[in-house]
Image 1 (cartoon, helix red, strand yellow):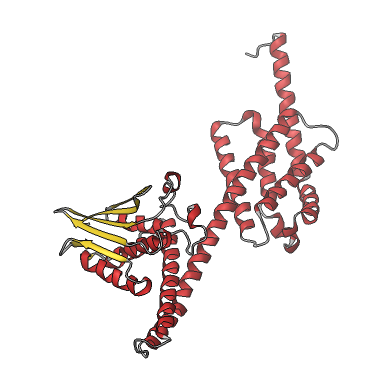
Image 2 (tube, rainbow, N blue to C red; image 1 turned 135 degrees about the vertical axis):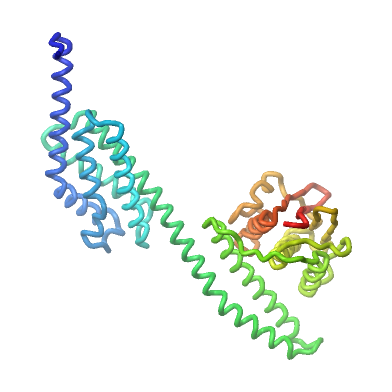
Length: 384
């Protein structure tokens, strides 16, 4: 039985009036959808430079579909169930993400231009719907909230798609670079064999090979970082390795390039189950870092000790310590300390070194103090 008390009648009349107004605004939005899009397109072409290269259908993208959902939201806002609200939210999110994804695919579009498109859309919607009378606060709030949500969805997807595109470009580029780099390296090695010791060009050719090796390492670092970002694992082939021999091999190569700077202090016959290629890569990376950032001409010590269950490798260089605040970002990808900003490389070496060590179920940490120098300490189980 309907309550006919004066207060109840007033509330009922108010609800009916609000519902009728909402439906009228919804119908007006649907009737004027094409006009809104035409006005929006004119302004977008005037104010958004990237839009000049798109035809009408591409430029409008998913926005007409967004207007349909907004109209439905205005019409049933007062009588929606929780399921309806959830369904509408999913649909709106999908539309916003679709718009952001497509815009990111065009090289001319930037985030600011994407946001400007929605800013223009909001202005045009209010311009058209308020030609006869101002909208009620409720309808304005619904429209503003809806557009803000669409902006957030489009912007987040725009950023994600850009990251995916950049990642794909980087992987493709670095993969394609490996071929010509290997050809140059092989050719340079053949040339090196033709020189006798003391030949004037021997040192130059050796330095060329060293530069090619660094370039190849940078390319490999990018490829591996891309795999890790994509959630893939590094390719590791485990075998029994003589870690003491591995250190000697690395030091011999580095001494050839940098002179007798490296000192190895090692237990004998240190056997571990590991990826020989990747652990050598870790040692080379840390040793090269010691050369880059350590005190010039000071010795660099590689100390290898073993117990029944694990091995401990310490790579130590003298010189200024790494500040505590900088140590916290050392193992993050594409992050560099202030001291490293003028050095070559991508800022991936330590990130990949940590990833490799962790893939061996080991740990890596840094100890750097005034008058003590810097040590990178690696702990590896003998049976990873």
